[in-house]
Length: 452
Image 1 (cartoon, rainbow, N blue to C red):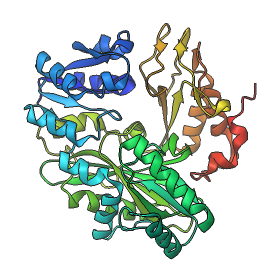
Image 2 (image 1 turned 90 degrees about the vertical axis):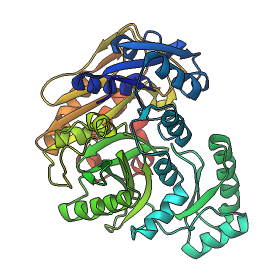
Image 3 (image 1 turned 30 degrees about the vertical axis):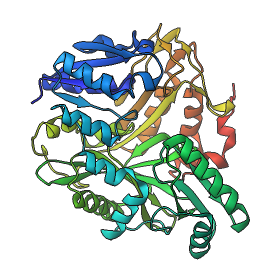
Image 4 (image 1 turned 135 degrees about the vertical axis):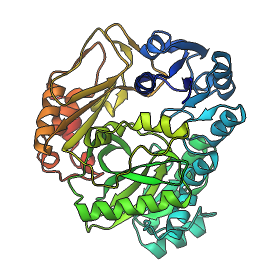
């Protein structure tokens, strides 16, 4: 086992990794920017290093400083968390080149699955269904128009190196295509320093279903069932649940087998998530793979009674998977709501500032993953996630009741949060009935409005 793990991240995920390390008897190193000096992950780690000024490029994205921090403190492993450098193959390579273990997949595996167009090719080669579209990046507007006409409108143009909803444009017909194609390439270049885009058939009302997988260095890959992440805005998830209300055991096995097959084809090591679109007719299509732990991993933990972060660390240290399950260990139902310092009524405008009061919810089956406290200042430089409220119940109905109660009793004052909005979602008849898709919020704009 490792002696000391450096966490190359901040916020709630840094605290999550610290807790897992403490259970394993492993020391931890927190890194922090000048803006995060008073953050809880700095307080609870065994060691800490300031790695630069507030902007991410000067701190959490600065690879030499992270490596230096690990070397100075004697860390023999680095956990990247999610976001920042978690899916950066160059970072994983430099960590390994410094004789430090990267807690995650290999650089080659990150590369193979990080490029969406390349990942689609790999999925097709393994017989995993993909949304009809271009076999790879399209080189020109003319080529793109031909692909779009062949698969039929509407189509979506996506950045090959994309994520977080950036570099994505929908073209409903041939007249819209040229403008959408140009805008997608421009956004892709600005966001990812690559203007490569590919084209897919646009599904009107799909559900977003993802499979949690875990692999070890002995060639074993398993899946821990699905999560439903269909409640989104601009392709960013807001609510997640496990299992999905739309997935039965037969479909669970089919999607899970496809995910395991794809991960096994590259000998995947560590935690990862394979994401699919589930169409209204029951057909599912591979979308992309995230080669890291996900924000929404706790719902899987609650339904499997299994610590994914501890397993990440143990597997990276060379141990085999501690057990193997493929869709047969689910218990009850879990829901997660992401609480952000944002104003839904103003297009989710970020709302940084001083938290003047903080009282988290509690009770049976309620978990809160957070890094905030009364007196904490939410900085304007990073993602606005404040907390994740996760509930577990014996049934979905019980989990829904617990989530409503938890949100109603969650007090955060001083900054605008998404708590009231999330409470409205939990009471919406379509969500209660489990009848949502990725366009749910587009159809229900009244949910975004402050109703006090």
